[in-house]
Length: 195
Image: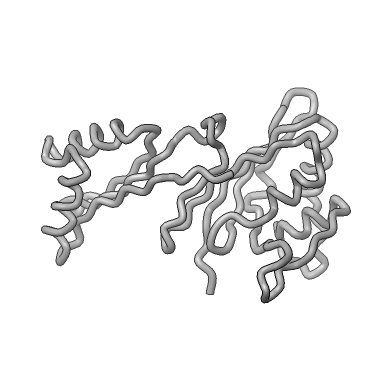
C-alpha cells in the first residue's frame, strides 16, 4: 500500500494553455472511472507518455487530483490554476509531462509525505510556496504544528511555546532524547528545493 503524499500545484501560463489544462482537469479521460487520475488529464489533452517500467524507464503517474469541483479558472482574470493532488510516495512526473508539452507554462509544486519524511518543492524563489520548514510538536499532550519561512522563525516559535526552554537544535535533540519513552516530541522538517 502506498504512502500518500499531498502535493499542491500552481500552474502559470498563457490563457489558452491554462484554459485547455483546466478543461482537462474538469473533464479527464478516465475510461475506468478513476476520478481525478493525472493520466486521465493528460489523455484528455491528447498527451501520450511511456508508463514506468520495472527497469525504471518511463514516466511515473500515480496521483489523483482532489476536490476537482472546487477548482476554478476564469481566463479573463486568472493567470494561474491551483489545485492539490494525492500522489504515491511523493511528487509524480505529472508536472514534467505538462511542461514538456506546453512550452508556455511553468508548474510549481510542493509535496509532503510524512511517513517517508518527504518534504520537497521546486519553487526555489518561494513565489507560491514560501515556507521552508514544517514543525509538528507534542509537548505535555498539547499538539501543535506550523509552517515557517526561516529557521530563526522556527526557534522563536519553539521558544514561545516552551516558555524559553527550546531555543536551538541541540535543545530539540535533548528534549527528544529525554522524552523518548513518552508521547512528547518536536519534529522539524526542512523542505528540500529540487529542480
